[in-house]
Image (cartoon, rainbow, N blue to C red):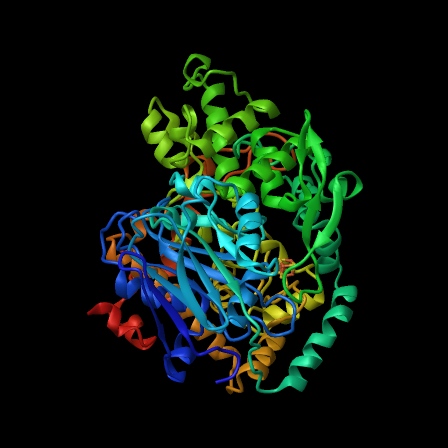
Length: 629
Ligand code: SF4
């Protein structure tokens, strides 16, 4: 085989046993890698109905064929397990250098079972793997752990994926971090790792994956810098980071503000990507072999506290959740919040959004100063930092908020649930379904809760969208662009087809800023060309969509085993309430239109429209009949 190492590492932490599996090519071609390959093992080894912190919850990390080959956007890994945040399937991607390095160490993935009797870390190097004592690492922040392991392993080129103290304390939205600033953030995979007493996975290797057609790959790679220069959207991403969209989102009335009550933040100009570039940005960073270099590195201080460049810098989502969600426009305070999240290892989206939820509870008199210990109104940067520190330490009110906003709302009671802005227990990201209407559908149906990276956004599929975007979408059969605020047949089709495409990206572990169906550096045809060049397989776009569909059905099948279907495909009450202020004043999601779209979506997906679950016929069609047994 080309691209793959052909080896999967299995680790039983309870017994301290490690072994290597070498699946055949048919297995690789069916599941590809990433999320689908992880789900293959999670579905087989995690019994239905167990608590996510039960040692039987199987945790996986998977790469794909292209991971580690020299082209932009390929160094990503996916983590899967039952999520402690949602109680359903968990799924989260991260980039950096760790994924490529794991491939160089000659593994395509890791399957982790059981719970170690005491803290351990996994050391994987040049095809070998061993468990080592991590008692001395427990309680340490991510930066401290990196320093200790570089010294202990005698190599500062080792790449380390690890949990911070928040993962050890089972904060339900704890992340798995690598490079101290790249996160498997969503769905709490860091808490699962913490429940297993697995502190870190250090990797190092000198092997390089063989490529079927090195010349074709080189051609594609060579095209990257020119495509970057010619594509304004990607170039802006490189120069201003993901926050390059913040000013435009706000101008369109789509910047979530004060816990999603408004789409307009009056002080947005203080937290934009441009403002960051003018003030605290020290340099740009990248993932292995990527020409875009969208990652931020900031250096500043906030009230005498240093913000260290080692912890990167805030993304658009982080600037939103700790910024506009909380009504905070203090860029330095947000940079510090980002650092604390990366040191302790938590998802910045769920964490910042949960703080905004708590602030609204305070404003509404549901939480009081006597209970919390200090006032926490919207716009109060100090309260935001204090709440964050309590969450990562699970202290005081932080112990409740560390459960995530949905569980916290139930614990607090007194009407707090009206302020909860989450789907399936996962907090909403900073792209508003009121404004981009297909996200009302995708946030509801996505198997691991609200997610903005599971489909293309409405604003890319408008009659006035650039030709390049529309031409690429047309290759997926999407030839009927629509205004952003409708959820009609053409838009449902757009949501579903692009969801399958994105589902493939999370299976092939490709960065969605580099490969995508519209604005990205490379389009669908180049994606197929990459897959052919790396693997030598006669890959087609049809196969790509089929693999994406298979992974989507596997995610959904996991939830169906838990008895979860259409009843859980809901939206929070907040999205049906009118927004206040800005261009979108008075706007809300239309409930009738949205419910009709749900039914139509299930029909398109071949799922039962009543239950929202994959039908046996659909699973058989995708070669997933084994899930039924
Ligand atoms: S575009 Fe950004 S996130 Fe994606 S691979 Fe490149 S540097 Fe990493």
